[in-house]
Length: 347
Image 1 (tube, rainbow, N blue to C red):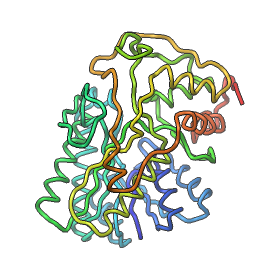
Image 2 (cartoon, helix red, strand yellow):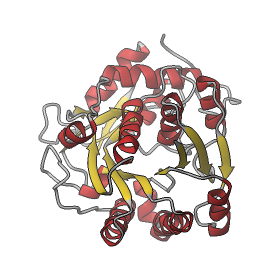
Image 3 (spheres, rainbow, N blue to C red):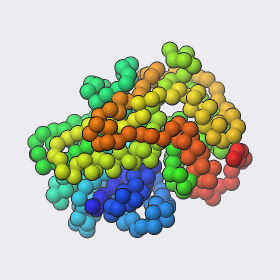
Image 4 (cartoon, rainbow, N blue to C red):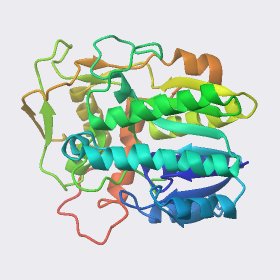
């Protein structure tokens, strides 16, 4: 099967591209590199021993997008491309709606013109908003509380309407929780531009000496240790979920929704402790006030993905931290390792 992966040079996209290659598929990566690095694609080729076609294209460029669909005959598309920082989306909502929603519309029009109607969409648990119901299942009402989450929710609506209007479409909406970890080789991993928006890469950058300490937002939640609890899922388990979705859609029409998570929550302090154990020394942290809108506890009910796809996450928090640390230790400044590190600690 020939698969187009939009945003395939990014964190989840590169790991999914590697899993697709390992599963025997041919892959074309499309990425504008605004928040990623083409080095990740080269390393995917290195690890897999297979060639990946790469096209530097922005989804807002409809002409260039059509050219890619004219050059290759795709069987399916996995769509990761888009801006993804919650805080930035609050500051720059127009950029998020333009890039995420309009970019997706351009992709769907290009797919229609090329008669490619199988799509796996990278959605997010942010579509549920700050719900206090746990575990979250696919029947929960959607109530995204920031522009980033609302772009995901709007795209889900568009795809649902498209599937209802044209039964030839085969669509999977994958709502995943908090990706973490890296490929076991330590050659590809998360390389956020600027200040990380997620906990694990921030902890990793503190551990490797790039940042002074982790700020823990809120130590007075109604949880066992007072810190927020989230569902962290290993990026390779997440990649496997996309492969399972592609296979499921191979002979089924319609629009399907699945949570991809572990079904277990870990607190901020538990994550810091697990990462400290992986590193071999304590990762410094300090407490600050809660951030508005943050739920105390959020984790997935992944039962539907197990029942429909035969998929479940099996890597532990310890494995996530060990693999994430291996990547960060070997690549202290991500894919741009031309900067000296102040100090390195641990094993």
